[in-house]
Image 1 (tube, one colour):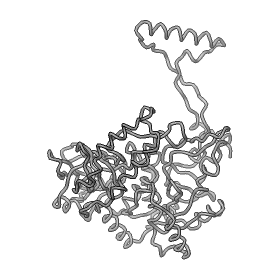
Image 2: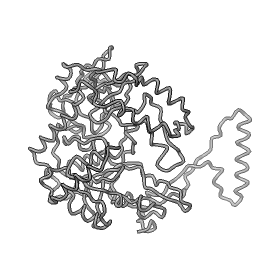
Image 3: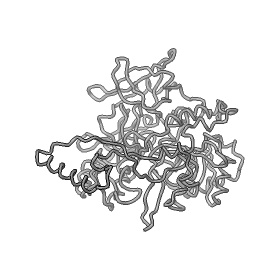
Image 4: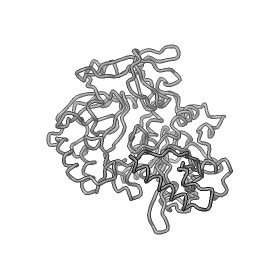
Length: 507
């Protein structure tokens, strides 16, 4: 199907408008005269002190690149893909759901159950090593000199790693960084897949209330290396508070509330705003009230020791974990995350592909690691490499459990939500589709958000880069987040082990 076949409603979504100053829009043929008058008036304004000229702005249609047909034509509503006869059926039996929740709590609170760092000096320094032989650029798109890096190296005081052994908790939403700075390090802005938003100092966002183990302090004391339940990196000291055993005992409860709405203000009983709650945020439950949960909220005292405040979360915004993993409930959470901006490594408190999956399944008490390769190993993995594209898609539709199957490819992951007229559908957060122009330069058709597509979004684009720009070609396997005993292909167990033996951890 070509873009010209779009229905009128879909085509309207693809028409962009840009406000232009009136002098650029002429009703007459003498465009040059109007443009010359505009330049003269602009020059006179500068000569008189650069007072801006206020002109009426009007809307004019501007040519735009071809739309992604999947996004324009497919309902961006996960409920549209539910089977009414099974939408309320629990995909995971109750007793197994409880076991998964126990595993979730074990992983979530793990930083408070260690006395030594989990990560070695080589591991925590690995991201820095990748920058040594790269040309890196700042937020102004200009190159950074090596002294900028070396100054940060000196501040890390890594020769004394680990110099700290303390438990802590995030008291606000924060970030894990490769080096102790909020400043970015981009690669070449002129190359596809580099530049914005790929800040190579960003590791992951960390939501408020996350348990931490602090293993190292910077030379000036303003930054710490924090081990979270899912990753390790530098975090500002202002974003954490130190905890002790009595705090842990009170906070680490069996009853946890998870947000099912995104961007929810978390405030204490004194109506003091603490931080913005996100889907994926977890809080201990003190009491269950009619229509609400009373929760514990971490904060810091004047000496940066953690204290506990209390607040309320309505049942419309939060659920007691684990929420029943029904297609209907999962679809509701998907809709909460749909059309959210893409965020590399959680940049600007947005989500990338793997953090979207992780946060999506948190309310259900299903623990997922932070990186896509590790997420692919969490359930029953069925390899799909080597299959012809049509057979690969048929295999997915035949074997995948809608709303409970991850589709993985190197560098990306998403959730299978069903099929539409023989086409498998995926919910995922993606930056864009690889393209290549007539002279061989690679580029990206930007999507930049969380969407529902087929496995071949953008296949209609005349400049799509094939085969690399085709998700279906890149898909290497699918992971059923269900008990292994429910899978029918016994040979897949051996294939899964072979695949795992050939993989190395990555983002």
